[in-house]
Length: 274
Image (cartoon, rainbow, N blue to C red; front, side, top):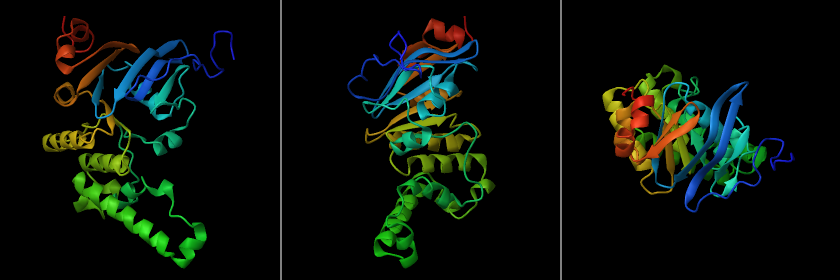
């Protein structure tokens, strides 16, 4: 450990605990690429049942922040706390299994698998129990678990409006439908935090409205927090409870949509107004 109280990874071991009620807490997160600071001392807390929008100009650090939260990229300094547990050193797979699920700006489905099997993949990490022997003898326990998982997939396919293409290869689907398949895979096991990266990209108007309805329903039981990066400012302002604005790697403003829309600094930096 260095003399400044940080571990070799740059994580501040003296950082305060997450605020009470926060599902996800980012504390003093900093990321640098050579001489460029992509994220500079970013702090953000998400509450259960909240939909929070993350906006900012291109290059503001939004995707980098998603990468830090989801475990794709470690921060140079700071920490990520999920349900009171410091997960900064956890990899992406472990975070996903703990309930932190993500979609991507470019759709990442398994193109050769059917829609249903893409969604089922979100549950496969749990295993069926009993190992290879249970497979060979087709144990009743294994069959019950498989049936329960298939039923869970059926419910999510219907919820996301993609049941009609359940047997179609995901790689053959229009981008709007494929995005909903990716959302279905992310929520088939109820997440604690759902990260949506440019979810309306490539969607038609009706699909955007359906996506907004599904996001509201996902957070409806107040067990899941949703954080979304989106360039469609109208979508963000109509859907989100709170909006965070990044500019040059720093948090420029945080507030309700109406507060963000009337913030002079935000209008100058992001909305292009004097």
